[in-house]
Each structure stands twice: as C-alpha cells, then as structure tokens.
Length: 192
Image (cartoon, rainbow, N blue to C red):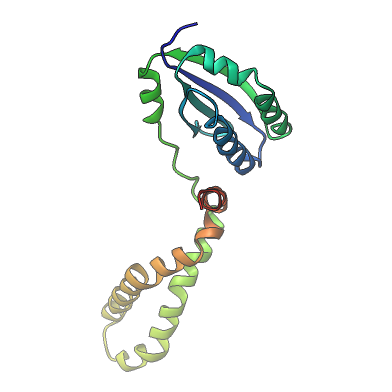
C-alpha cells in the first residue's frame, strides 16, 4: 500500500429512464464516502448516453480499499440494483488524474423534439400575426403588397424575437427539457 493519493473512477451503465435515480444515488453515496477517513473529494460525471462515472479520491490506496470493502459500501452497492450496473473500475495513483477528471464537462442536453419546438414557435408567431391582420392591415389596404408583407414580417419578427420567445422558452422550459430539470431539481433539494 502506498501513501500517495489515489483516484478511483467507476463507470456504470445506467438503466434507461433511471438517470435521475442514479444521479441521486451517486451524490448520496459520495456523501457517505465523505465521512470516511482519508476522503479527499469526488463527483458524479456523465459520459454521454447511458454511461456515468463516479469519481472519488482518498489520501492512500489503503484508505480507498478500506471504504470499498466496508459493509456500508456494500449496502450502497445493493441500493443500486435495477438502476445501474458497474462496467469498469480504474485506480490512478497521484494527483494528476484527479485534476484531469475535474475538467470533464457534461454534454449539453438533447434538443427538444421537433413537434414541441413547432408548438412553441406557433404559440409565439400566431398571436401577433392575427393581431396585426385584424388591427393594422385594414389601414394599409392602399399600400403595395410587397411593403405590407415587409411591414408584417418586420413587426412580427421583432415581437417574437425580443418579447415572446424568451418568455415562452422560460415558461415551457420544464416541458422542453424534462430530464435536465429532473436532475437539477433533485440536486437543489439535496443541496439545501
């Protein structure tokens, strides 16, 4: 056994639809790990799709092994049944691996489905077009069709871009990105 710090990275294959449960499990397990002697930090990282990583660091190899073989850790692994399965475990001595692991950034959330984007866009475009047609266009009957259409496009585009779409995107955020909101919500509740 060495007295050098050791970083352990455990890869898990998460059951489809259980990412939020795994995220909660990972941070709760790291909370229990933080009470162990020699614990120096850790995190839960997403590596795209169904593979996630739990990374933790101990002051020595012996302290890391003591935690991994403890009854408490066995109980945490038992709670993982049906949520995810361990795929790979790596141990790297020294500090460099820890800092390299901290630079990983989670991938951006998947874009919403096309029909949801269509609905939000229609919700933003239809009201101003209808309003413009009922209130402004009757007074512009003598104007050339090209200029009437240009005026309609300029007004509606400005309203949609700066006023309506930002508000609708905030309003429909949980509906457009439900998986991201589920992860954020669970993390916020635990942090408080």
